[in-house]
Length: 376
Image (cartoon, rainbow, N blue to C red; front, side, top):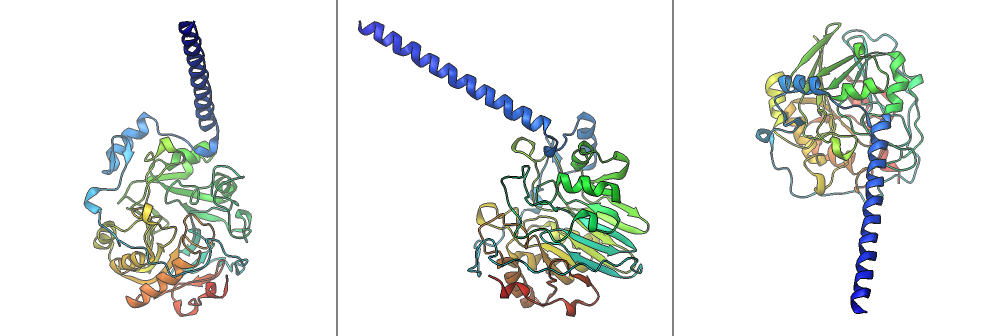
């Protein structure tokens, strides 16, 4: 009798295990199909792409992009936060309706910060848009994920025609499918790090409009040199594609100005190498937010951002990667307050324009208001 009971229990146990395994298999297949069929996750490199990346990028090994070991530097050991505010502002963020210049002269640079890392640069007579995201969430879905502090105060349709869209990497707070699709018809050229072209092509952007670049490669558009430079970060639209695409910073230079945009980056030796190759910069836009000790190698503390500006020889610096989404636990205003304080101590001039404010980079004294301090 006892043996019969044991046998019955064993058969039930086997049956339960089989049911669990079948459910796991069904869920795995469902997730695979969802990722494979949903265009928001972007495209994947084929065999020819991988061979091309390997030939052009020294940091592409075992079919993955990595940050070189020779650049690795230990950053600060403590995150000294000063803000006591929440991760999201209780007040509506103020903004200024952008004053885009229709035809700025070739020797002028106008910069309009649109929140987070979204910047319109009007330089060399060209309109250059960096990391545009205008969706309510930085997420593959509309119902969960980092949500904007406030309603977007501008849409893609309200932007002037764009000569160049620059993308630093493929994370959702920097590369948004719906935004790219809405910009496609008004954009002449997309310049992207290696691998990101596959995402854009899957979303309907013609390959003829896309230029992909490896670190240290340069391209010329109407006399403006655009150089792809290193960043200490990572990439991926879902867990299994991490490292499939390159992450980068950007350099814009002509006969009048030289500008740097950091993309997302932790602190590292690449800043010194960039300065060695290109010299000092007139204007630097630097990642200084969404930091945490748990992912310190991917995002600098504001004091490290200021240090990076010093290494880059920045004449004027502007903090970015804040003011739209919260992707960490620090106070929403902690980044600009700490960055300005650290930059002042290093005698680096800073600008902190309001969202939407169009500024002339040659007149930094007009854009120093600490407008976030009056908000909760």
